[in-house]
Image (cartoon, rainbow, N blue to C red; front, side, top):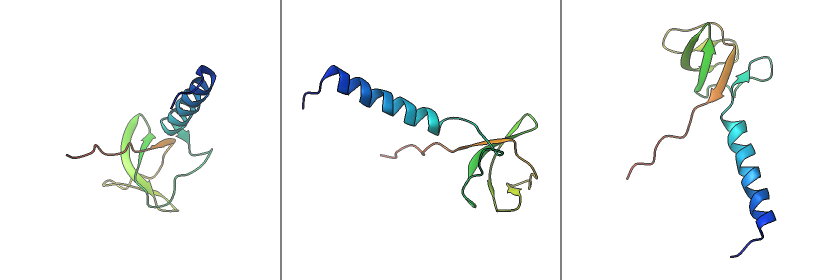
Length: 79
């Protein structure tokens, strides 16, 4: 299917915007992740993989605070 250059550019810009929004740090003051879903979290210069349980942040160490978070990337496809 042939598309016009303008349509291709619009579609590519939309995909770039989608990827940028997915791969950015989100301040906890802006919004919190869905409860119980693992995310990449940043606090005090350290990165953690953990989740927010509705009251506090959890991981293997039970860290208590978070400044920023972002969704984890999709795992690789296995052959």
